[in-house]
Amino acid sequence: MIIYFSATGNCKYAATRISQKTGDKIVSIIQLNKNTDYCIELENDESLGIVIPTYFYGLPVLVKEYLSKMTIKTDNENPYLYSVSTYGTTPGGSIEIINNILNDKGHELSSKYTLQMVDTWTVEFDLTKEENIAYFTKNTEDKLNSIIESVMERRNDDLTEKTKGKLFYTFAQFAYELDRKTSYFSVDDSCTGCGLCQRDCPVEAIEIKGGKPVWIKDKCLICFRCIHRCPAFSIEYKHKTKVNGQYTNPNVAVFD
Image 1 (tube, rainbow, N blue to C red):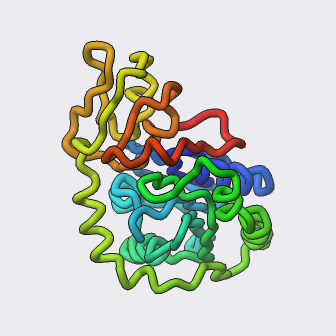
Image 2 (image 1 turned 90 degrees about the vertical axis):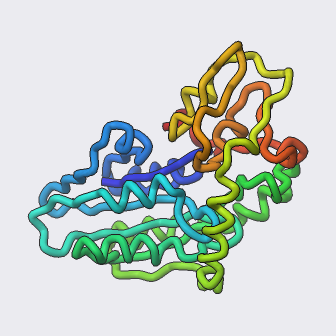
Image 3 (image 1 turned 135 degrees about the vertical axis):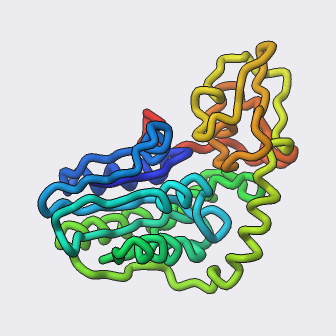
């Protein structure tokens, strides 16, 4: 089994590529969380992959909360567990956080992987230019192939990007909490009231009222799915993202 969290398609793409080779089913953490399904049952010698993005040197808060509640039910005393952390600029301490959560449950990651993909934090990154997207993805497929080979052979590998990012984790998480305020989102007159943002939001923080999205929770994940998936590109964050474009993984058609 592979569980994943994906806002704009990167992690779903990685999880799908791995599953195509291993034959493992993939399940969205967003859907597991909505269904309050915290028990992961592994059959026989089944492995568990956890594919997640790096947010602010750590994990999206929903992912951290889900993994903390998750239990793994298996007859195997030493199941093969691995994690893939995608990132744009640094994986920070994301893999270590996952391993620590599993340690608290009596488990250990057998293999650890990081994978650079497009950074969709368009507060900073300009995704209107193909060369910028190419910068993030220049090594993605080769690294993903190496990860797949390692998983297929059930190696005990550490194919992580060495980084000093985890040293900034505490500061970054403080910034994450501040930036999660939904008051930073705005919507312009191009909005058609289609309701996609409401249906898409992983934490159900948006409702359509008077034909426009309204953020009904004080905080969200700032996953930016609402920004990048908006058909009219009507949603903006801190009045900084519009100029830097939209991006969803071109290989993904269904976002869940």
